[in-house]
Every structure is written in C-alpha cells, then in structure tokens.
Amino acid sequence: MNHFPSWPTAAFMIAFVSIGTQAEAADWQIDTAKSSLGFSGIQTGKTFEGHFARYNAIISLDPDHLEAAHVVVDIDLDSAETGDRQRDTALPGHDWFDVAQYPRATFSSTDIHRKDGNAYEAVGTLNLRGVSRPVTLSFTLSVEGTKMHVQGHTRLLRSVFGIGQGPWTTGQWVALEVDVNFDITGNNAR
Image (cartoon, rainbow, N blue to C red; front, side, top):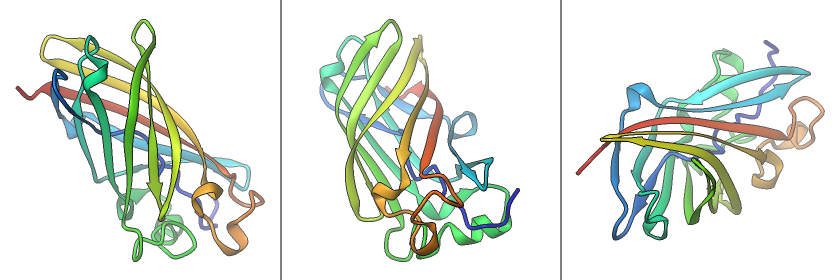
C-alpha cells in the first residue's frame, strides 16, 4: 500500500452504529465481537480498507414501530486502523481527523423508513470534525427471535467535512469519496 497520509473513510459512518430510542422500539445490545464499522477509500489509485476499533453502538428498533426508532452513533476517531503505519499515524493528525480538537464523530437519525422488504434507510445528521451535514444510511435488517443483524453502507465526500487539509484537499492523492460499511449483530436487551 502507498505511504501517503490517507483519508480514512470510516469516520463516516460513518456509518451507523447505534440506534437509541423511544416508546415501542426494541432495545438491542450490540455484540462487538461479531460487529464491525469499516471504511474504504482510494489512495494513489489503490483501494485501502480500515475500521474503527472503538465505537458505541446501541440500537432500539422495531420494524413494526419505525416511528419510535432513533439512531445515535458515537465513534472514537483515534481508533481508526488501516494496517499501514504511516497512514494510521497521519489519520489522527490536524490534516485529517484532528482528534486533538475533534475526538469523536456522531450520527443521529431524524427518520428511519422501510424501502422494500428488509431494506431500510436511516436519514440523519453526521457531525464530523465540527461540521454537521445530512447523511442517509442504507441498510438491511433481519430480526430472528432475540437476534438482530444489520448490514449497511453510505458514501461520503471527505471534503465536505474538511477531512484532508493542505495538499490533501483535492482528490489528486486520496479520492474524495469514502465508503463506510457496517455489519452489526445484536441481542435483545430486554
């Protein structure tokens, strides 16, 4: 893999790692050993992947009561790992996540709705590096008894959040698009 500092795609996700809630939604306890919040991007023409080792994922969601569902995601940006030492050292720095000033990224939903079958969308706001922008997370949900499984994706433009300063503001070395993927397994918490 190339040794240029790289834009980490997971702060985006942002991805979606938490659904907290109201009245009739089911509460789910995330099984972190079986869950992941990952990201991928392109650096000098080559794809790289990474993940966040630390995030808070709490889910309250009943497919029959989506009006009560709410997603809240909390990600420790300093936990981004790509397996490349130079990139992993650069990500927390000022040009990228700037974790000294903005240690966390959060996503909070305003609406969760079913698209078709077991396909859903969570519409909300992602706050990353002090910038808040609307984000939509597409995901599938399956619930079997006391088990829940969510898989999803979103694509973000890192430049919208100020990720990649100085020579990294353009897509010349690191693509502006970042894919965020999540695979969450949970157990009914009630």
